[in-house]
Image 1 (cartoon, rainbow, N blue to C red):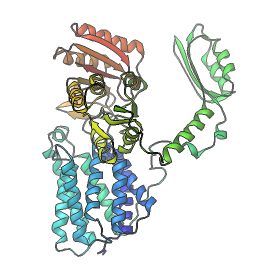
Image 2 (cartoon, helix red, strand yellow):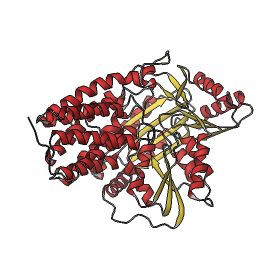
Image 3 (tube, one colour):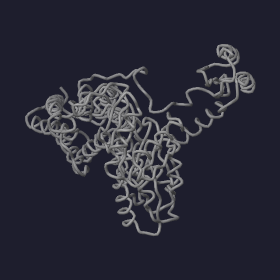
Image 4 (tube, rainbow, N blue to C red):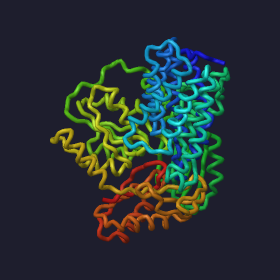
Length: 544
């Protein structure tokens, strides 16, 4: 039985907690209330926790204070999504409680857990029960009570886990949204996996995460040399069929001069992808089937070299100071999709952070862009409810004034950017941008990632579904039916301006058809159709 918590042991506990949530992140992801393909609570908690563990490995702490500070600092900068931010706050509170302590006894550990909960509750503007906050609060309370009589750390954590499991089971009753969906809280579940991993470290058990189970946040381009790329050119094209020449002959031709070959055809077109050193010969052969509709050739060796250099630059700590103010204001916006990014750039946004559903950026990702802008005050548009808290964590990490406009969707962010006025002061802009965002309704059309039941409505995996301001608006196997029902519900508020942003998997013709449907169903509204290029959502529709 372990009675003293040292810095080295705490670092091992953090590493084990990170390994535990990594192993179970998909299970936590599956607890997402809506069955859309953005259930990323487990992924966010894993990435956040692993950042804390990495910081501990990097700094090799000796004292408990050093270990707790390293973990808390890593978690704070790596925090992703609301669950990741709250997790970082729990460890920040623990670090404050462990300040100037070489070691800790069971009572000190329990007190630190309670301090973490207090820090998290204070930071969350409207703390909701039936969440990770509830689970961690009741777990820490049980730990404090146990520590009054227990003489070892293990008993304290076992007691906390048992109380946490009871609290987790009750989240379905405390949170109306969870009750409707019939699930327990995902963040609370993730927290208990982390706590269990930390308990195992106390017992001397190391959780191993094999290469097969570890999913990198992004590819490591330096893992292979440019010379390892045998075929230089990624060649893609679409040919309009003008004869009945067998497409298998094209496939056979390509197999002799390339790899990664994909040839798809129908009665009208042939769509082809190939890696080759002879793109000219490929295109010449393709012309024997018909005229080109599109052609794209990219040099993969140059792309790889660029990515290696880019990644090395990202991983090298910046030695330059934050950009000195040259103007009063700057704006950072989070979005996914080249079309969305272009729209924000056209509106005068200074920096884009790539992210959104399924890929929430970390506090560090946002902070880097804030620091690069030569402005005294930087407005941040998170454009996703799960990114707002991560953006807010930038505020104590920079000398710049950071104003986070609580935009929950990209259309809200666009409206906020339009409302910005460089001739007004910061307070007036914050008010105007916030009010503009609130005036926007947003519908998001995607597909169901799994079977589910919401408000008595059965949803099947693969069906199209629509969320209107976060509430299920429609689901059907026919996307046209989902679009039509969504537009009808949008029309109930008689909007004056409707904009359809179509995603990366939608053709321009299909998008125009949706625009025509909007004009038919909403005759009083001005309708625009713009390419967003966003992943996950086929259409994002804003109404003002």
